[in-house]
Image (cartoon, rainbow, N blue to C red; front, side):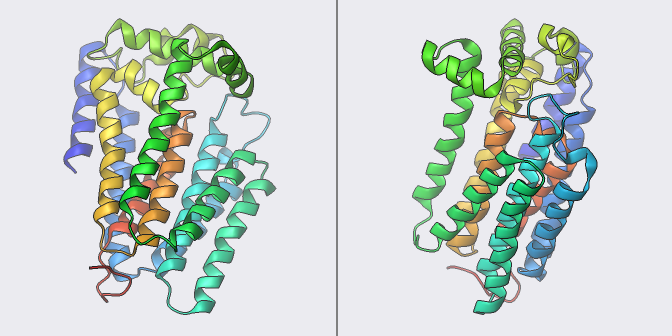
Length: 321
């Protein structure tokens, strides 16, 4: 709560300094806080039913809500498609957490089939990245069943997220070898890389406070040239750096790091903790290269999953000393 409060306060400070618009950041912080509180409460009362219902809701949102489904009209890199991908990954993680918490082979099998169905749903709606992210979460969850010590796995998840964010930052700064940079730009599109370069340029303009929340679109050349641009750089770390400076990046990284630390310390079983960690890491990777955190459904879903995985079931089931 202290970290989320600091994120909200810093967005107000940077907005006041540069006449920014902090409403989007405040909504995201509120969604995470509300989702986490709801997850802790429902996870304590219904450790299986709550994440199962959440997985079903996430799947329905990703498939049935038109504004979240990828399609030709969303040509901006990982805009609404990124939200669909994130919801599919979170839904898979929630279903797998419920499966590990379930007692008996039949309920566990049914919940794993729900997770597998979520992976197939990604392919059905045309989200190849969503299908791949969901499959990665499912495989990590299955592998977590054979792990008895979660610390090394949690560190590995943190390093994976840091590696992706660092690679994106290096690509924007032109610090990668020419061959690798060209290969990544070909996969990610030149327009997206231009957005990242503009974000890094704005971050260097004012490293301390940034240019103000919500002001990237009016100051970025690439954003003004894009026909379908939404005024965002489509990278959460680079957006924080451009709009809220170095402190904003540190707060974003600290929030993710705290979530992994809470999963390391949770009394829930190791498979539940590592499954939730894998899903949240998938979200961090998607957010590093897309715009997923701009959707309240995604931020609330992340809070819910973290709450379910760190809740203390009142029945004492599915807990480790």
